[in-house]
Image (tube, rainbow, N blue to C red):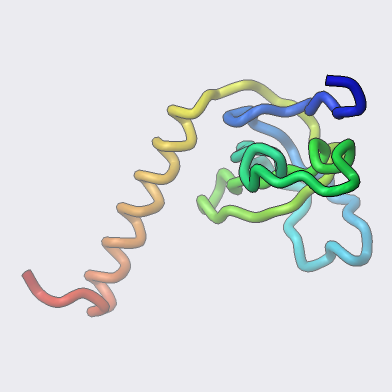
Length: 112
């Protein structure tokens, strides 16, 4: 299709997020590694009048804590390696297990 931007990153790519984020993104994390969850187009299946820009926005999962965050612009990310969807599922399982242990430890779960 003409007029569509070809996205640079794909689901499962590990990237480094720049430390130099713009002022309006100061509440976002920078200078850390993350895994690409997908582009705006991939995750939201949306199209607006600015279709070229949609391919340049990405949702990520931070590798140190498993938290997901959207939207980073393509130029704020640097490719490190491709890990694949299996890596995403592995991280989610690790983080969900940690959360379950925390809930049990802090008494948020009913005793079994």
